[in-house]
Each structure stands twice: as structure tokens, then as C-alpha cells.
Length: 343
Ligand code: APR
Ligand code: ZN
Image 1 (cartoon, rainbow, N blue to C red):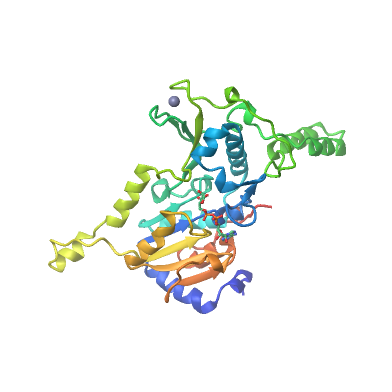
Image 2: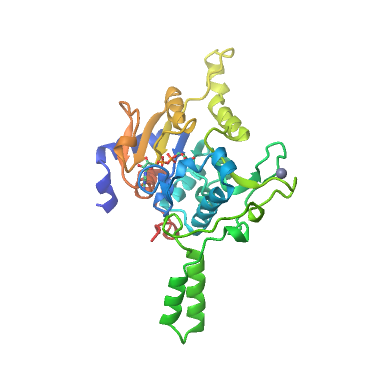
């Protein structure tokens, strides 16, 4: 028996697989748990603190107004961590499912860029909460936005302080090998200090050293993510509405029903690694259910499998193990290059 099967009840896996194979319209709603095994912290529960701050309290327009340097440092750290993380087998599995099932749509809450980097087709993943790699003017009336900015750091003042001790140690270990020493120094610079730990000092960054808007030249740039109290991107919302409103004219015309076009049925909804506390994301599973979908929840914590109903599935465990396993009958075995998890 595959060791991963130990997580899964064979009868659940069997009934899920049968339903998956019949499903065409599939919606996935992933959250931070999808990227946990790539080494990125989640928001709630263990790892949800950044220094002494609740990660969610830094993700507000008010926090940015009152301390833009601190909020930028938090996002600079997350950009740095995400750039140095690798997609895990669950990201690749969802990307492959998208290629196999053209009516599969992922509504992701994650801003870490790992689904796009796993090759998930862009028109099949909607980034509900924006991206760490979009930056925009804090003044909405200016309207400047820059996408796919992968500079790390985005400005010199936001560099993650390097881990000098590990640099010294590693170059000491191989004094005669210049290349090894240079590589070790580079690795220590890339890794940086873990500034999520409040005992590691970070600089106070003056406003003048933060990234400024090149268009209006007065306001600051801010991360292009959706903060608490803000609207989701309009284009994303209208694409999602269009998906849920799509009608299938053929069978209805056959039924002589031309005047009352019903939206297409949704077959399956996969809720992956999210605490389902933030709306509208948390509402998409019930919307899919109201359109006929059966729901499968994948989470390490059963208490976050909310509103389970008869006929749903709950698969407990790490998304990086479970997702490729339960989708295997449609997507096949993962490629060797896609199986590594964060070490
Ligand atoms: N595999 C599967 N699930 C996991 C794993 C894992 N390896 N690790 C953690 N989880 C689960 C946790 O049990 C929890 O239910 O992932 C969930 C993460 O929940 P949150 O930290 O609340 O993250 P998320 O649901 O994505 O948060 C939603 O809140 O502040 C925001 O905008 C931010 O997009 C985020 C939103
Ligand atoms: Zn501007």
C-alpha cells in the first residue's frame, strides 16, 4: 500500500474518485494551508504571529497609514520568503487538473505566486486577494499599478538583514575553497534572518526610503494585495460571477425551456487548507453547493472543516500529500521534478 493511503479511508477515496471522474465543472478554494508545506506560514493558528503582531492586524489600510515602514517590512519578508519557496505537489496537481478539465476554476486566497509558478493556467486561477508581486499607488485616484515586480528587495531599505553568523561560519569551514565560500555567503544572504522573530532587530525605515509612486511622485507604493475592509479586485469578481452565471443553452433548448436559462450545474468543490473565515472566499463552497456541487474539504485540522453535510468528503492531512493522491485517477502520477517538499 502506498504510505499516503494511510491518511485516507479507502471507501471515501473510492466514492470521491468516482465522482471526480464524472465531474467537469470543478471549483477549488485554496487558502494558506496549500502553501504550508512549501514553508510559508499560515495566518491563523501556529505561525500566525509576525514579530509580536497578529499577521492579520498588519494587513489593513490603517496599519499602512500609521506605520508604512513596518507594514512594508512585513510584506518585503513575505515577498522574500515566497520567492525562495517552491511550489509543492498540491500546486502542481491543481495545475494539472486545470489542464485536464477546462471547466475547472481555482479561486485562490493566496498571494504567494506559487500556483502561477507551478504552471497553473492563468485563466483558470483567480487571485481573490491579489498578489505580493503587484505593487500599486496608495492613492487610488492616481491609479498606478505595476504587475510581476519580483525585485527582492523592492528598494534597498527593505532588504531582509543577512544572516552574518552563518556567513562567517560557512566560509570558515572551507577557507581554501573560494567558490564554496562565495556560494555559502550568497546562500546566507538569500536566506536572510528570520525577522518574523521579534528578538531579531529590524531597522526603522524612514518614509523617504520606501518605494514611491513613479506616476504621481508623491504617494507611496503599497503591496497589491487586498487588505481587511477592502473590496476584491473588480475584474476578478466579475470573472467569478461570469463563471457561476454561465448557462448551457443546449439541454435547456432541448427541454423547450428557452425563456428560463438556468446556470450550469457545478459538480465538485475542493476546499483546501483554508480556515474559511474570510468572505467572500468562505462563501464560494456554499454557492457551489447550491448549484449542485458535492464538497471535499482537505485540511490538517478537522475543526476547520465547516458546515460539512451528508455526501461531503473530509480528507485530513497535509494538502501536499492529499491533493495529488485524491486527484491521481485524473491527473496521473506526479513528475519526479514536482515531488520535493520544502526541507
Ligand atoms: N495542509 C492542509 N491544511 C493546512 C496545512 C497543510 N499542510 N497547514 C495548515 N492548514 C490549514 C489550517 O488548519 C487552517 O485551516 O490551513 C488553514 C489556514 O487558515 P488561515 O491561516 O486562516 O489562512 P486562510 O484561510 O488562507 O486565510 C484567509 O485571511 O488574512 C487573510 O488575506 C489573508 O488570504 C488570507 C485570508
Ligand atoms: Zn501615484
